[in-house]
Image 1 (tube, rainbow, N blue to C red):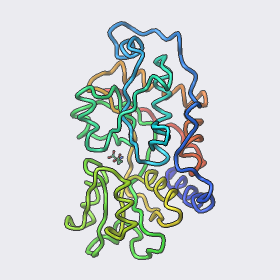
Image 2: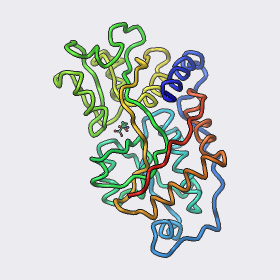
Image 3: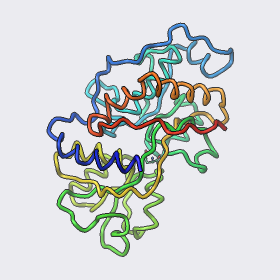
Length: 293
Ligand code: GLU
């Protein structure tokens, strides 16, 4: 219900702020206060990262509001701010974060290979992924939706794709790419590596719809200058987690404590307000945190 409320408010806000919103850029000097004196049990991931003075974070580079690489070469968005909160609790500044683009299909692999220390990238917690990695969180709950051209009156929800001669675009390795098979003919599903390519395909008329999480679509609508709209009928729940090495329970608990603290000291709300909140002003409440496993 909360999500629907958020989206209803958000969509009307999109109309109101299309001309002013900056599509995900945020002030990079705007950093959470760093826990400089942090000390951690020897051998833990926290101790290793603090000692290294560096953390590698996987995030998206092409998703306005959540993770969008700016002209300064650094990503901005809600996921980026959540990562900065975690780094700050480790005693690391935003400048000590090395940002790695983590496209949907590479996220588990990058965590397994140690190419990143953790992933904050609109990353849905699910059992299949939990076979390879662990998740802290959730820190947000999105829902899958559809984005179409602003003047489209036919694709109003996923049911409209059944038997329709309409192509729908999503991203390889994402949950929406799987779920949409329940509605669209496989021949009509077009997959790219990133959502910005789906937005291009919609603009060019190569596809008639894009499907992924509503908040990702919201960012794409916001930067479309009125060309796109969201169907507005979310049809899944996508709890976003922070992906970490499988079985690293101590790090998972540390991240969860960081999230809980941020939800009470204003850090979580500020992270939202500075990013996605520019388009969807109502800051979400931190969802109930799951037990680490
Ligand atoms: N939340 C979904 C997922 O993790 C879609 C967004 C994405 O591809 O990052 O697959």
